[in-house]
Image 1 (spheres, rainbow, N blue to C red):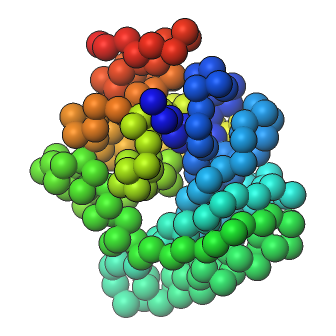
Image 2 (image 1 turned 180 degrees about the horizontal axis):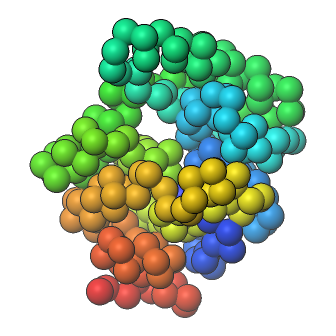
Length: 239
């Protein structure tokens, strides 16, 4: 059974046995966590445009990627600003900072390498998540309220590519915590909960109904989504 491990940035990820991992996919700077855990080079990585928006956690993530590499790097575009003309006008500088070419330049500065660079628009990513969730109405509504996280976008991409009979999630907790540093957003917001949590949980609950090979080695993911838990010995425990 060919297994793709999709790794998020949660500290101390609960991993399946390394011998069961045939390929690795990463989200944002989880490549640093992968390197710390002795995991193989990612076959692909999905990175959000937010990394170059100017926020401190974005700069932290770029720094964590220094000297690392991936196969294909997928750019996860942010949604276009909404609201009044003045709100959209104030967001223009942030939009310019989040262009694909800016991400490439920032990664080059820290010596991050990739084999190919692919760009998908925000609506394309949302459609991908909805499609892999079986066009579920609850997911459609959740995605309309808040876009999925970069990690869930990476999971959807792995499922959609269809190269693996099993896609396993590790390093996910629906929180803002990072394996490579303390995320400053936690102090700024006064909470460690991700704004994407509700959308992510709805999407994962629907995805597992469509994809029997979806599993997780993280108990918290199993508890919140019903995704089957991968046992330490390599078997899948059904809820």
